[in-house]
Length: 71
Image 1 (cartoon, one colour):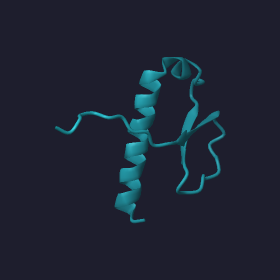
Image 2 (cartoon, rainbow, N blue to C red; image 1 turned 90 degrees about the vertical axis):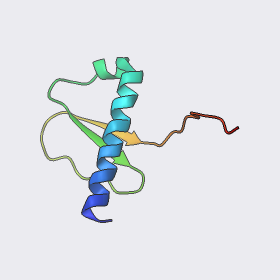
Image 3 (cartoon, rainbow, N blue to C red; image 1 turned 180 degrees about the vertical axis):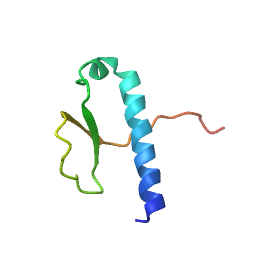
């Protein structure tokens, strides 16, 4: 995976997480202050946590929603 592909995938997963938290605000309220959010994908291994801050891990799962029907 090139650097560009990895950055693009990270951006997509970040926006997926934001959409999830907007749809489920109760999860947003449970995040600790100064916590580090880590997104784990099934197609690449998780990196060890080294910051010392509380870590909240989310697994990135793709979901689809039908937008428009074909005529």
